[in-house]
Image (cartoon, rainbow, N blue to C red):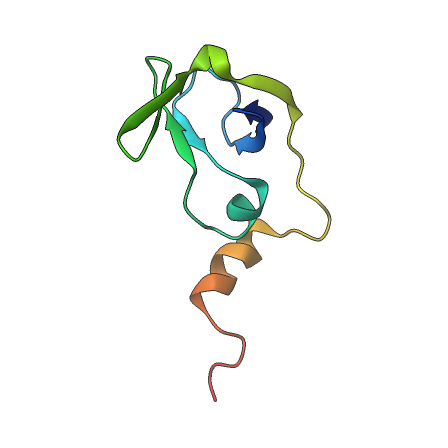
Length: 88
């Protein structure tokens, strides 16, 4: 997973390198299972809401993204599906 910058904003790209296709997502949205900001396609096009907003060359790689100790990806996914107050 990569930490990247696009259009002066920081994002996460959950693939190993920019030659792969995948979502471009904020850290908050990634950790809470929300929708992506944009999508990088295999041809290098970056699309958002069916509009081209850039290309692979517009992305700056900041480093590798590492989960914080407080973040558990399984808990984040299932926590949005099941409320801890259930059953009543």
